[in-house]
Length: 459
Ligand code: ARG
Image 1 (cartoon, protein in one colour):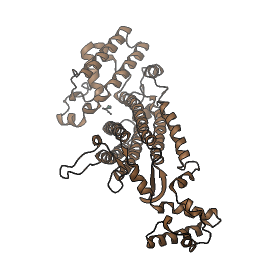
Image 2 (cartoon, rainbow, N blue to C red):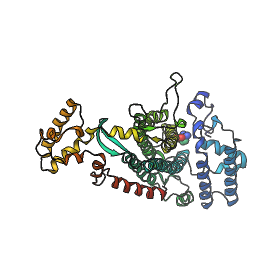
Image 3 (cartoon, rainbow, N blue to C red):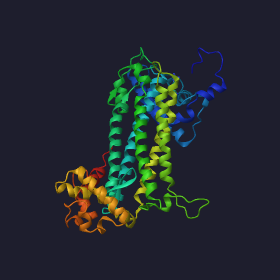
């Protein structure tokens, strides 16, 4: 492509080192879409004729079909997807093909292709996050009354509805969707016309190109436009965050599926056995999701480090943006799909969750609150219940098995009604502040999410 200035062929090693066609072939549809819009602008500017424009568009569409049917021969010597398609077009239609690159550089071309790719992929990602939310919601709806201990420091704290625990993840994923929406605005800006770095002396109608490609805005600084990869970094951050949310869920699943917890049973279809230990049923899907999250964060770091300290404007370093981007999107989409499939059919062992929740100490805070309602300052109440807990532990009898007289050894405020506090259902019903897990609240949240998610708000 640059044969004019050079006398020696590019070395084989350099070709091998610098090629991106082995992965950026995936941009082919966007590259072709962009080139068809470019041809329209060239025609409008009088650089090519209408028949030439038609020839270009037809040729490009044929190339697209050839790529999709596997007939197309990608050439490493042609470096990247842009040059592979341009060469094939010129070989196919001659001169008109050689005019396509007028007033365009691969620098603004690759920026356009990548934005088109990110745009389409953001939509796909958004939908898969919704699918994941729906799977969690289904599980919540199927077990509306299941109670589990809520933990801090992985120590039993207070009782909650299992559905409340699942709804927490739906909230996290909703924030991820908001982030995708917000990032989309910055992806959705059209860079073509920025040229190599300083536009062109041949003036093309950038608005027309933007309209043809469905962009609501066009970039305003050619130097920024050819070197801007912020939107990729943002997307990789969002993907990392989704991964981190899924990895936290994975950790819960791994714990819940253990004999120690036993709260859920994953289907055979989503677990694996051990080649050595015949009894094993391993939550590999959740472990892989937890593991792959490291890779997603790594991809984000990789791009940030690539951009750091780059001088203006385009530098070849930027070619390193694509593999992390493709990899992160491939992995997160798969993770969301498989996790959704697994969660939707997981079985909740309500007998086990109830057994765990029968731990009387889960209601220690409720006992302290009981004293507070009888005007004992909270700090005093906390100490009284602390001592009561120690007593109950040495006696090896739960709060429900102590007598009123024993309670009164710690505070004479205790009366017979204290035993009413020691009921999980009462304890849950009492947690009715906004955001707390009373059954009424959780029921409302479930209906809210059912409506919101079925309205299928696409990006
Ligand atoms: N394959 C290149 C990339 O992905 C396309 C742009 C090349 N531009 C250049 N001036 N060498 O970044």
